[in-house]
Length: 296
Ligand SMILES: Nc1nc(=O)c2c([nH]1)NC[C@@H]1CN(c3ccc(C(=O)N[C@@H](CCC(=O)O)C(=O)O)cc3)CN21
Ligand SMILES: CC(C)C(=O)C(=O)O
Ligand SMILES: [Mg+2]
View 1: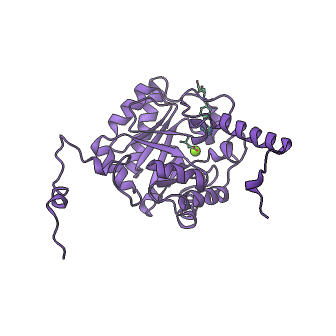
View 2: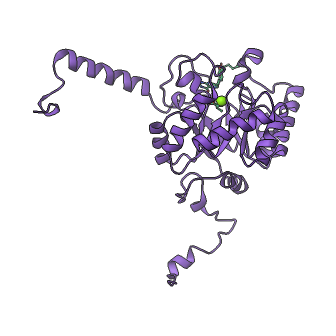
View 3: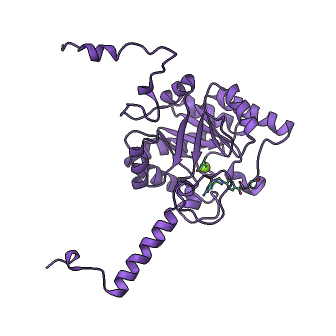
């Protein structure tokens, strides 16, 4: 066995609560192995905030992985943002399996969460287990997400008992657009109480995290304080443990009217439009290909 140097030994001294061990951080930490749901649980205990982005393909996912994004969601928002549908409702489990597999292949560090699409878990726990098992075995996801608290309780329990980590999704649940519409959820005492109950039910059923979509910030803060699992906000204020955005919204690729919770960090749509026009102009004008692009 090799002797540890003094410097190596000193890194093993447990961090005091006053100076949290930043080497373990989900974002900006030193870890290189793939993140697990246990790392997510530990982050809540440290009071650490973390970012999540959606991804639908290997290349985009590899960029976010290299940027250090610790958790990626293969969202059924792929319906809108990748497949050209109006809503997430038509998305199939076959499509989610294909996209999830690509995102897993494109990443080495992020925890990949696969969204269970509409119709793949509503029939009951057995259907949910069959669907989630496909995403785990065929695509290699580390966890799945499903919409609903109380109404998806039996599904969450069976998946967790079977060894599949579950992220729950409450508030605006887009798969229920035909009954709920796209509206803020949890406004008013009764609705707020129902949401808090749903969150606790998801936690008790074994969920490792809960997405809160379009929920009043004060209510999301209360849920965050009440749970020992992290809350992941989207339009749910700053007090959530984590934040998620749809990647094409965040990078300005989606186009059209954005939900007000979106912050745009780039203008990919503008960049790509300009590049496509520059290429087209070069082809039409004869500037491309130049001599160095030809083979002889
Ligand atoms: N591109 C994209 N981004 C998303 O965030 C997203 C999807 N697609 N598809 C799946 C769901 C659907 N989501 C949505 C869809 C619409 C609103 C929306 O219309 N919000 C309005 C009104 C809210 C209200 O005041 O009640 C808003 O201005 O935020 C919000 C979230 C979030 N998800
Ligand atoms: C917006 C997030 C939470 C989602 O469910 C999705 O992208 O499908
Ligand atoms: Mg979704």
